[in-house]
Length: 148
Image (cartoon, rainbow, N blue to C red; front, side):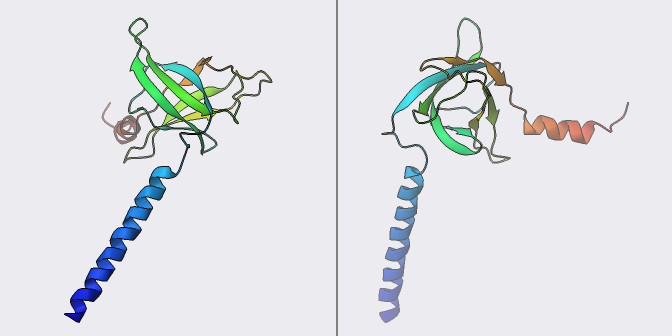
């Protein structure tokens, strides 16, 4: 009976610690209460980009994707983002879509430009870089020395 009580207490402790980690992991990143301004960008393709994905500069989250959709007129993938107001983005900046590796984890990365003019709220970032598929890269590597 004594072992059963110890096991019960340990199981309860594991549940509490797990719940704390889940709550903490959910709260890390961009705070929804932080003031933000909106930016948008268009890509030929935006695979895996969904609302809630991080927007980063130099690997640091500065915002999140609020919406991604297909523009019915241009057929470009449009990505709308909320950027924390403390971060101003130069108008000559570029956007790229990055994957966290083979397991996924897509995010938007901003390559900051050098302009002294900053993007206004609601502006569109015009320079976008198309994502490179890891499976395409692996296929090219494997088959580049193939039969000619």
